[in-house]
Amino acid sequence: MPDMEKRKEKQIIVIVDDNPVTLKAGRDIIKNDYNAFVVPSGEKLFTLLLSVKPDLILLDIKMPGMNGYEVIKELKSRDDTRDIPVIFITSLNDAENELEGLNLGAIDYLLKPFSAPLLLKRLGTHLRMLSQTQTLKKVNEELLQAKEQAEAASKAKSFFLAQISHEIRTPMNVIGGMAELMREDNLDEVQKGYLRDIRDMSGSLLQIINDILDLSKIESGKMDVFPVHFSLADTYTHLCSTYSCLARNKELEFRSFLDGELPKVIYGDEIRIRQIITNVLGNAIKYTHQGFVELRIGKTIRNGSDWLVVSVADSGIGIKEEDRSKIFSNFQQVDQEKNRSIQGTGLGLSITQELVLLMGGSIEFESEYEKGSIFTIYLPLIFGDKGKIERNTLFERVLAKGNVSVLVVDDNPVNLTVALGFLLTHNIKAKTASSGPEALGILWEQARLSHEEPVFDLIFMDHKMPDMDGIEVTRHIRKWEEKTRQKKPIPIVALTANAVTGTDKIFFEAGMNDFISKPIIANQLNTVLKQWLPPGKISAGAGEESKEKSPLKDQMELLREACKLCSTDEAERIAAVLPQYAGSSEMAAALEKIQKIIKSYEYEKALNEIDVLLKSLDRG
Ligand code: ADP
Image 1: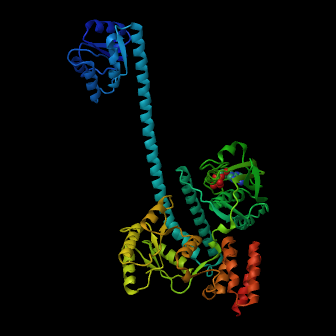
Image 2: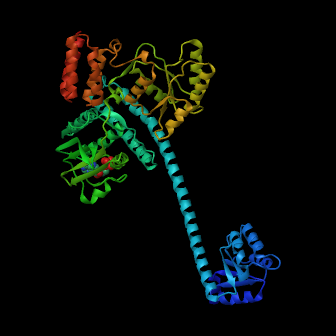
C-alpha cells in the first residue's frame, strides 16, 4: 500500500520509441524517480492517453506509422493534451532536425543512447521549471480574479455612492432650500433658534456627503486640480471673517496674519486651497475650548522655489504622541473619549492631505497634548496675473429686469417649490413642468403662441425623472430646435443630485449647457443666471436698474438677518451693493459706514446702525 501511494505521488513520464532497447534503457534509468510508462508507437501513445495523463513525454522522431512530428502535431491540436510537455529523443545523425521539433512545440531534445545522469538531470530541471511555471500561472490567475473582484467591488461602490448621494441630496435640497428661503420676521426667538439649527445641521450633513464624494474621487484617481488666477487677500479676508465669527461664538481669540510680501494674485485651485485651509482652521476651532486660534499665511523659499506657507495654531486639546500616526487616515478620530461630544467623520484631514499632495505640497504638524497644535501646509507658490482673475460674482446678485422667462422641470413638487423660491429672490417668476412630456408640451405651446426667440430664456432641467429623464428631454428640445430652425438654442442647465464625477460629461453630450448640483446653493445659482440669462435682461448688483427693482428696506432687512447669523459672505455681499440704493448723499454715507463696520466684523455695532437707518426709513 505505501508503495502504491509512493507510485501515485511520483510524476508520470511516458517514453515513446519503436526500439525496445531504448524503451528498456530509458525505463531502467527513470523508474526509481518517476512513474514510468513505455509505448512502442505514436498510435499506442494515444491509446494510453485515454487512461493516463503524463507530466512529460519523451518522444522518438523516426518511427514506423506516425512519426514523432505527426504525434506532436496531434498532441498540440487536442485540448486535453496540448499542455503536456514533450522532449524529443534523437540519435546523433538526426540532430539537424531538432529545430523542426522545437518549432512544433517540443521543449527540448535528448540524444540517444541515453546517459543516465544527463537524462535524470534534464528531466528534473524541466519538471521543476514546469511546476514553477504552473504555480506562477495559478498565482496569476488568482491575482487576475482578485483584480476583477476588486474592480467589481469598486464599481459597485461608485454606483452605490452615486445612488446614495442622489437619494440624500434630493431631500436635503428641500430641507436646506426651504430653511434658506424661510423668512425669520414672524418667528419668535425659540423658533428662530430651531430654524438656525435646521440650516446648520443640513449644512453639516451636506459637508459629510461632499467629504465622502471627495474621498471616492481621490480613491478612484478622479480628483482634479483646476488652477485659476485669484486674489489671495480676498480668500484670506473671507476665511478670517467666517472663522473669526465662529471663534467669537466659542469665546476664543482669533488671530490672523497675511505676509505683505506675498503676491496679490496667485495661480492655484482657489476652491481646493480654501477647502484645505477651512478643514484645518475648522478643526482648530472645533478642538479648542479656550485660548486662541491663529491663521498665518506667508511665504518661504525651499530648494530655490517659492512656497506658500499656511500655518494654523491653536491652544486646544492637542494630540497624544501615540495618535500622531492616525490623524491623516480615513475615518480615524483620535482620543475618542475626550472628543465624544465633537462632531466629525475623521475624513477632513485625510482629504486635506490628499489635496495638498495632489498640488505638489506637504502638510505637517506639531502638537503637545492638552496644550495645543500647529498645522503647517506648504504649497508651491505660483505668481498670478491680475488681469486674468475671473470676475467674482459673489457680491453681485443677479436681478431680472422685466420679463425673464424661465422654465423649471422637476418631477418632485417640493423641489419645484424650492427652485421657484430661489428664483423669486432674483425677481424671476418661473414656469414649472413636473415631467419631461409636460415640459415639451409647454415649450411647443409657448412656441405656437409667441414668435419671440428663444422660447425660454433659460430652462432648469432635473436629471432623473420617471418616464423621460432630463437627458432625453434635452435631446428632444435640441432636435426640435434644429427642425424648426430656431435661431438661438435655449440654454439648458441640469439640476442634479448626483455629484459623482463624470456625470457632467453626460449632460454636455446631451446638449445641455451647464449644471448645478442639488441642494441648490445661492451663489451657484447666481453664477449660472449671470452666465446664461441674456445680459440685457438682468442687472448684476452694480447695475443702474437694480435701484428701482430692489427696495433699500428689503436689502437692509436681509443684511440685518445676515449680521445676526454672523453670515459673513452674505453680509458682505449685501453691504457691498447697498450704497447704490441710496437716494441721497447722507444715506450713501450711512450705508458706506455700515459696509465698513461689517468689513471689521463688528456685527453688533452694524445691527445698531441698521436699526437706526431702518427706523429713519420707516419715518420716511
Ligand atoms: P474630524 O472630522 O474627526 O475632525 P479630521 O480628519 O479632520 O476628522 O481629524 C482627524 C482627527 O485628528 C480628529 O478626530 C481629531 O481627533 C484630530 N485633530 C485634528 N485637528 C486637531 C486639532 N487642531 N487639535 C486636536 N486634535 C485634532
